[in-house]
Amino acid sequence: MPRKTLREEVKEIQAQLAKLQNRLETLEGREEGHPTRIRTHIDDFDDLIGGGIPRGHVCLLSGPSGVMKTSIALYMLQHNNEDGVHPLYISLEETRESLQETMRSLGLDGNSDFIVDIGRLRTEHEDVEETGDWIGVLKDFITKRKRYRKVEFLVIDSLTGLYSLAELADSHRELFHFFAFLRNLGITSLFIYDQGEEGRYPNREDSIADGLFHMGFHCLPDGSVRLKLRCAKLRHTGHSMDYHELRFENGRFSVGPLSSSSL
Ligand SMILES: Nc1ncnc2c1ncn2[C@@H]1O[C@H](COP(=O)(O)OP(=O)(O)OP(=O)(O)O)[C@@H](O)[C@H]1O
Ligand SMILES: [Mg+2]
Image (cartoon, rainbow, N blue to C red; front, side, top):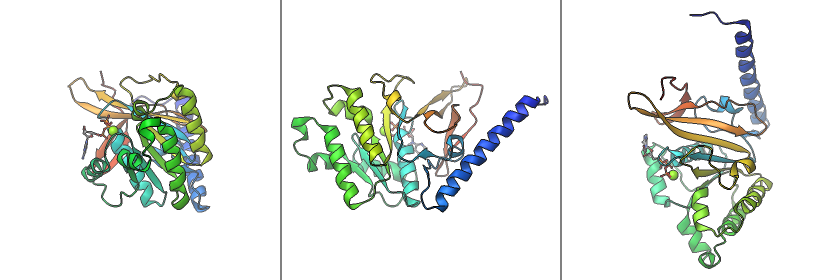
């Protein structure tokens, strides 16, 4: 094995130090009763992003269809729920029953009270079909929910679904105000975004989000396909930008090095 240069060794030590500092920050926050970050619970991924998503950040989780965006978001919420972090999952595409089935298939049994689907939103806001004001409906629902239950970690599945429902005259501007509304409430939020090709943000959503996570398919020369995940942006955080292989085994998501023999 070739010997490491002094520069490489220093870089490695610096990376280890940053990892330890991030861990310390998370532990200190936990001791005070207010962790400063919301963990993704993806094994070895939180260490790469400073311990988790900073509280109050509004982030995007993008990737093509079938890459397990919904699955991983449900996984994050369920594990946070178990940690005592209050979750809310708003689905604008799938029904609550379908999402419960996804949870069961991932071995995520237990409480799924935090899932609200579009059917319920329609029932509670009958006039929305006429007004098309879906952002107004979401704001109203979240505000009311916060009155009787804490909401600390929100997933909206999906932003693409919201665009097809809502009549937005200026998507960038309206989204900017919606994100600001969530930040003001201190809700850590994750918008799922169906994106065929990485980096395509027609309404410049990437510039107004505090964090960007990309998922994708990783094709190997032998025809096998793996999943990959990377953090492309996370404000207030020194983080890895690299793609990592994403695995789901024995009921847990984890990341590891990406095979360099990819196409
Ligand atoms: N128990 C399981 N273990 C491993 N993989 C699974 C399991 N159940 C489903 N999958 C994989 O997850 C995929 C669906 O995941 P999911 O619905 O989360 O994707 P998505 O990115 O949200 O897709 P969409 O764009 O349709 O919303 C399936 O096509 C399958 O490959
Ligand atoms: Mg989905």
